[in-house]
Image (cartoon, rainbow, N blue to C red; front, side):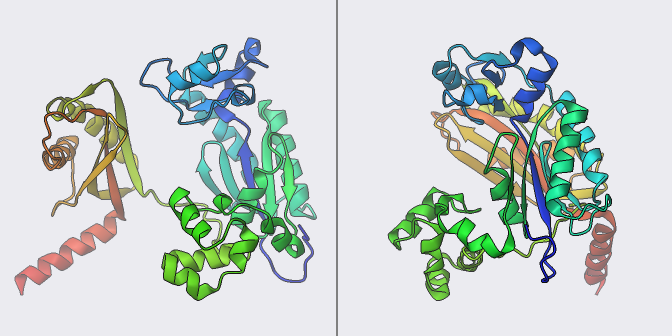
Length: 366
């Protein structure tokens, strides 16, 4: 990136740890190094949390059913997840980030955006900052990280994947359009299979093709997202790095050992309500909307939402809302469910909630 570019562009780094969960397991158990490690509970209903690069060569991927991973990679070494350990390593990595900038936006335990338009270390370029961070991470944790450096978040995230694992790629401002032109449109954020098919119907396969489509055509076909596509095709992304993103939702879910009818799913709700409520108690904001999530035996996803007049104020009230939502699900006796989840969303500040309640009370007195 041209860090001394006369235009006052942001300098953004996207850091992504390499096969984080699997790499932590290989680091802590030397006999696993070089082995195809699959992080998952080895049960018929489990899914893969992560796979080492050795396992990925066999086609193993995150979110894949563990049973399929075992078929693709019979010699794979299954390791159960250890989230307490991952969180501890992640905290160490984030301490390193903050030695260079306070503008750090975590995306997950193993990746984050950093705005290093100015940096605490006084390094002359964003590229130098990325190199220093990667070196510090490896020295402190014995783990490798890949990084993308670019004028905005969208480009930096794509770039961090360019030379994985243990790579660094820099998208310099004058070369943004060249960098994007040959990319398939499926690489753009928000372009799923359905959108990709609609774009193909317009004759669009690459970002260069997309750049040739008029804005009005994209707006007519995709609505508001058409404007976003127009901007992405030109490498535009004005989103700032947000270091303290407020909580938006809290949820818990469980995958059943055997598919269950709706009448038995209700038995899973108390534990889920308790788990969500304990997590919510650690947050300064409060959730007003309860969400029930169900996945059928054939992997169809069902969700139901409820915003009661008074938000849930205990695990028992949260459970009651979850039970009400479950009662709204069609009572097909033949339908079976493999997963249930319960969550809170629509979070607001406590002060905002009180103000809203006072306003509603005053309205009622008129």
